[in-house]
Image (spheres, rainbow, N blue to C red):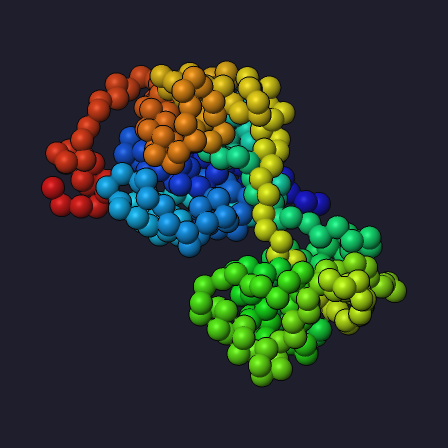
Amino acid sequence: MDRPPATLETDALVIGAGPVGLFQVFELGLLGVHAHVVDALPFAGGQCIALYADKPIYDIPAVKGCTGRELVERLLDQSAPFKPSFHFDQTVLGLEQQADGRYQVQTSVGTVFRTKTIFIAAGVGAFQPRKLHVDGLAAFEGTQVHYRLGDLQPWAHKATVVVGAEDGALEAAIALCDAYTRSVTLVHRRDVLHAEPATLARIQELRAAGRLRFMEGQISGCRTQGRLHTLEITDNDGQASTVPVDGLFVFLGLSPKLGPVAQWSLAMERKQLVVNTETFATSSPGIFAVGDVNTYPGKKKLILCGFHEATLAAFGAMAIISPNERVQLQYTTTSAKLHRALGVMG
């Protein structure tokens, strides 16, 4: 008999591990609040990593320029003293308010939280892999068709096909080649690839050595017999050819979906959460929204605006987290208490 999942008790649950969600963790930490963080991706960073990891950002205060990846690394380092608990590769599904005012939240993998406050920092939504829509493939998702690489061991001595032209696809192709799979085929509609120079150089090296086959075109069909065994690839001239396959890895990018948040009876305008700009509270007590997911008069979808919103949301939440405690504004330049929390010398 399966046991029900253990419930994680917390004062604060942050939904979204993008830059604003990470700064929300930091601001809560300054106020002595430990946070749990849930994100649909298998890593922190949100769209900063998913969409522009290596592109420059120039409008972060006091930082002349940094990439999305560098910004996320700095935010993770900044929040590290507060030891946030991350829960990756899962989305929030159910939300139910309890008799004591707290919220019980369940995720797609069965994790259950009971929390006093929720901070929705989901940006434009949870990022999900773009699916490859070919008749017959869906039946093999999770067994032979994958949207992430995962463990390489099952693919040793197997025929694998990778679809895509950017970092994720090329890095997967390289990893599969290095894992001594029987054959690796990279498929894209054009022989134009986009990645870091070192990655592109390694791809070219593997192609020249005959270890990686590149096919220009698109997957147009498949053949099955209890399992997926052959893919049909049609080139730009309409000519079809086939390739054997044991494992298909699809990297067509990510698309955001607001998901169950839209069903939580929170006040919304144009698929964004309406907030009170004094505390960035939503229409439900204890639920706050920061970053691109919210809307209010004068709203600007900028990371730096999200940082401001996270600060006010953290202070606003203290009336619920510690209703009998007076919260004083302290400065990291002078507060010995904050210095101790941050692990720095005063």
